[in-house]
Image 1: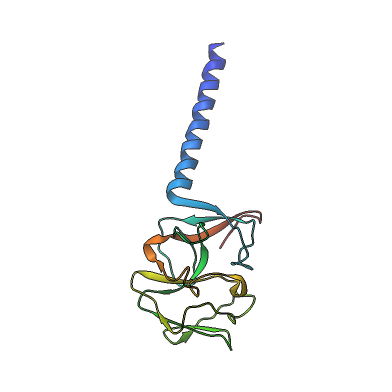
Image 2: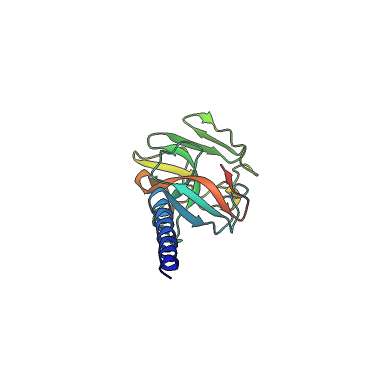
Length: 172
């Protein structure tokens, strides 16, 4: 009988240790979030579960997760286009986005950027902030709209590194 109790105790201790490790991973190193909306299609679809690495350095072109308060009361998932001090311009006739006069190669887009918001371009991103755009530029409220605007860089959780569900596990 004691043998069974010890075995059960070891099993429970193993489960508890695994729970602690998973909790640390997903509360300290990663943030998991549900994608709700079409603003990042075709990269991510509504219903996907994704993981963002934190803390981690971010680079232009990364898909990032924000912790910013906004009118939608939700974390934003957008693509990082420019950093503080850089000038963003969008030519809505050609669909071209430029940063400091250099056109971005945006192979991840299904459609060019032909729809704007209420922000006037060219726009110099304030120091300490970033400029973000959704990949589905026709259906994304992002830094082109004053209700979102440029996001403080400190409000970035980190880059999205993985789609967890519903697609098969794959690194981005």
